Length: 291
Image 1 (cartoon, rainbow, N blue to C red):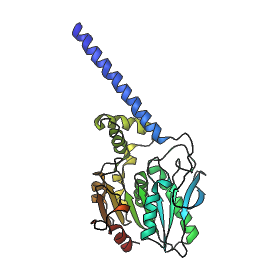
Image 2: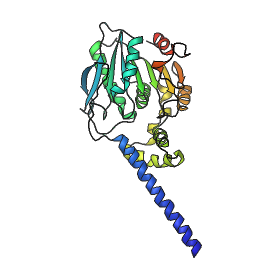
Image 3: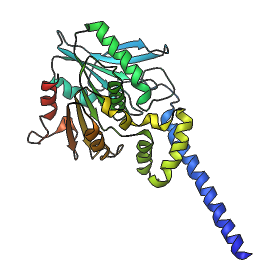
């Protein structure tokens, strides 16, 4: 009898612990998927022009455009998860230095920055919005105007999926930084940084994300689409970024069938590399070949 009571108590404790961790997992996801107020996008150094368009659902999307006279091409930049366009200011300043004849459009994805929306996308939901921004550039500068793209984290995922879906036919190249293989493992990695074991959170995240996003998790796996992308792509991954698993980039790079380059970095971001760094000129050379 005593042994049965001990087993019952242990089982009950495990159930309560599991329920508590499920609740924490659900709260972790909700805090990142939903925003409670619009935080206006503010830049510290750059002074872009604000532009707005409507997406397929009539939601207003906000972009921030840096125009140059007689531009050769345009760069569209897509920020990372829970961020806004101003988070790409350092990257944009660097692109200005190496691409002085390029317009730069930094976009606030739906549910982020100054754009409409309560629910943040995890990359996949942003694909059609990127397509609408691409159409905006085509209408503004003409069908023959070259466009290339830069995306970070979920922004990178969105670009890979848009490219794989054939939506960016005018794109000369993609630059994807800190991308990940699938959404569940991305959230598991984020939770790991907060002290939650991946082996436990992964199955819980499968339940929570399927419920919150109302999409089969297999549809949120970048590896399913990567082989369809034919746009020349530069993969940048930095060990210093604790939001994504550094090793994900190797599977993505190895499975990509497009013209491709890999820039694995240990600490400094690509825009702050020393002159003697072996990858210092890789981005410029990649753009010269695929500009």
